[in-house]
Figure 1: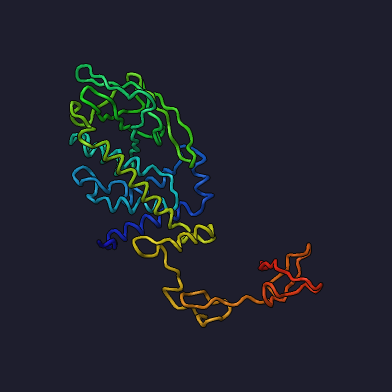
Figure 2: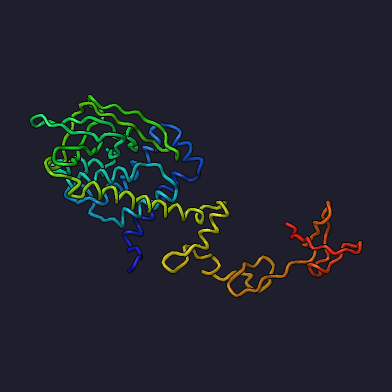
Length: 336
């Protein structure tokens, strides 16, 4: 299986990487952005729309660009690389349910505005107690119950909500500004935003046929599985972060250097790609490479820790080096 990106995918990666690296050039920048509501940068969100990232997986007739999961994974990995807090996965997955279940009118309306960056969606599918119940009265539907947590639920312009119906599980669109919707927002442990959303007879619009069971159709399950895959790609981008950020955590850099994936190293040291100018074995400052013999430590680096005041040691053997008083010192340490 070939994992090499083609020219268009590489151009997409470079465009998103350039945008996010400039916007989140340091951890402090991200911290400042997440301090204030809505917890992400509206400017970055619009710029993601301009490079086409928000309409990638959707059909062109619905207002998208007809790309696939590989392109979405590329964007998710770049988002994870800088820990960007934008609600990319939440919006893409909620819009994916609209594309999967919605009518042609719903698809063109919602997906077109998502691709333009004019709409933030949130997928409300976590029930904290009893499931949210959908009630039909004629052609109208209302929802009652509570969903929590709903990621970016306060900022969302449109909620995609799962609810219990007589047929099983239905998926509904809810305008959060309508009567009967109460949103209580809070910060998450990573600086993001989530909300408790309570529905009390809130008006809702079903996606597709409300008499069909979305659980049996697999739409809601596919959305949750896709989100897990997207989070995994964000984590993969985060795992590559130490190599791209100078001064990162040394333990994280060592982990990335030593870890192997699919039989190959996750990261190749730079000196394997090009010869070092001081490659000669034993040259001062030359990097260690495979096949180099370990350099012998200098004797003056050995100190005796037997006494209260450590002193330089001769280094002539760990057990045979005397301390000058006729006894033998066996407690040696490497001076750091």
